[in-house]
Image 1: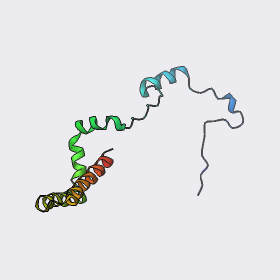
Image 2: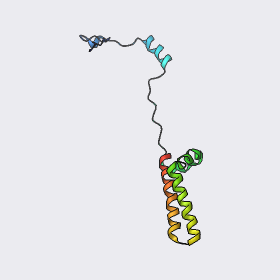
Image 3: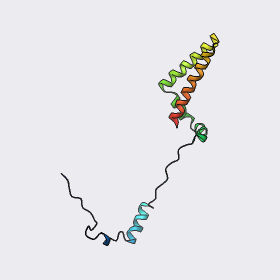
Image 4: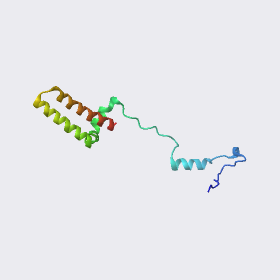
Length: 111
């Protein structure tokens, strides 16, 4: 089941290991490049969210076009139509809240 792993380290005298030769190190440097870690990509802050939305508005609109989002937008349109007929403030507020929920959900999905 378990296999014994082979190693290049002399377990009796590990301090005698010298490492790569200068030629081998130079060869690997040319072949693979420097051994550096690139910093992670920064997350967009809330201050520049508007800039990202302007640059990538199609992606933002895709988040607004899901099934639930379209249903909420349809309900808000019906609420605005109801407001124009009955002139009740509740319908206007309901429509604004529904649009706000869609925009908030799309913004959170975008970020």
